[in-house]
Length: 241
Ligand code: IPE
Ligand code: IPE
Ligand code: MG
Image (tube, rainbow, N blue to C red; front, side):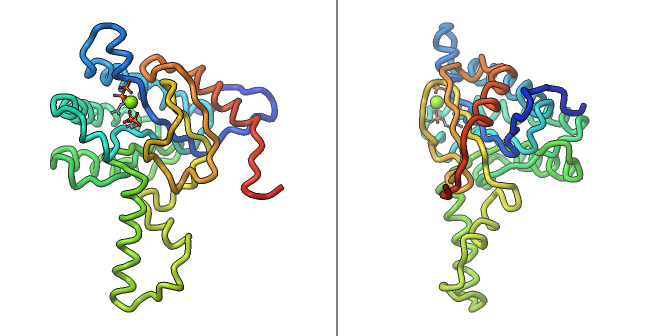
């Protein structure tokens, strides 16, 4: 499916969109349901929005699905989220049919072996696809990402392969979990919160932010389009004039 959403003339569609999928718990609470029902509904939204992002002509879409801090939640909620990942990773295979590449960022070593296996296999099977890249941040933290990169540089220094004064931002950047993925242009956060919560802190250094009070399970394709149009109306200066 090619780009099918027609934006007003001159609209600049962001190359890389980051989405903080927030508000699942409140969505369920409003309906008197346990929080896990909100996560289940949020997973449906994720599928719809991914397809819509492709129609919008977005090249990379990164979803914050589970943060390094989310382990603090009650065990039954964490277990329910992990179960959903297992189920949805099977369904993520549908995206492969749409020529979408799937990648994961974050520390996988804390995840179940079964989940890690599924992640590796989806990544392998979709690695040549290029209509869009879908990035899932699972056990991801922006601070952990930077530490993980710095450790690799420190190892090089220790082995005598690198002098500390030769370390550059590019070297650090290319060792982040996002490796060769371009910087994030637009961060969308639903649910009314206006913070980054340790999402792509390095990669979003010059991102535009779009906030909406809509809870993630209620977020629709047209809300994504509104965010793209709002982004396009911003004046990005990158420190220049
Ligand atoms: C986001 O929704 C999903 C995850 C963090 C896994 P929340 O569960 O944070 O929903 P609220 O913020 O409590 O409504
Ligand atoms: C951010 O949402 C993490 C994800 C959406 C995965 P949180 O709900 O965990 O963030 P805080 O706690 O409100 O900052
Ligand atoms: Mg939340």
